[in-house]
Image (cartoon, rainbow, N blue to C red; front, top):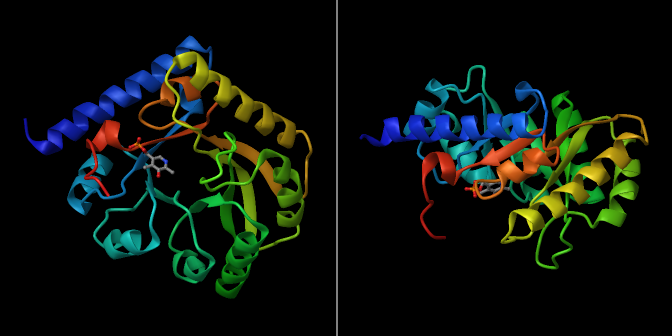
Length: 235
Ligand SMILES: *Cc1c(COP(=O)(O)O)cnc(C)c1O
C-alpha cells in the first residue's frame, strides 16, 4: 500500500468512528466536524487528505504553517491555528487562517483584535480552557473564563465562537468522559450567559486517543492528527 492510500484508509476509519460515536450518543452525524491536524505533515500528504474530502486543517506553529501554506490546495478548506500563539507572532498569522483556537489571555485577544482591525477584518477565535488545571499547560483556568469573555466581548476585531481544550492524558474511557463532560458543562453555562459578540456554538475537544469519548460528551469539532497521518517524528 502506498502512503497516500494509507491516509485515505485511515481518514475513512476516523470518519466512521466519529459517526459511530454520534449514533451511540443520539447526535446527528453532521453535528461534529473533523479538523485534520497537519503539523509536521508534508504539503503533498495534506493535499492528498484534502483530495479525499478533508475540509478543515489545524496547524500548531505560525512559521511552519506560513512556510507550507502556498503549496496547499486550500480552496474550500478552512485552516485553523490550534497551537499556543505568542503575541509577537499575531501580526503574521491574522488574515492567514480562518480561526485561532488558542486564545487564553486578554493580552492575546487584544493583540488579535488590533491586528484584525488593521487589516479591516474580524477574526474568529475560540477560548482555550485548561480544564485539567495543569500548571504547565496553556489555557485559562475555568474560573477565569467568564472574565476573559467579558473583556473579549468589547473587542470588535475578534468574534468568539466557542471553546477549545486539551485535557490531561487519562487512561480509562470513564476518566476521559468525565473531564469532557466537565468541559461540556462549562460550554453550556457560558452559552446561557448570552454576552455581546460571543456566539458559543463550537466546542473543540478530542484528539486521536480520545475523540470518540469527546463526541459522546458533546464535542462539535475534533482535532485528529496521528490517527490519519501516522505517528509524528519525535520533537
Ligand atoms: C497535535 C495536536 C492535536 C492532534 O493530536 P493527535 O494525537 O495526533 O491526534 C490536536 N490538538 C492540538 C492542539 C495539537 O497540538
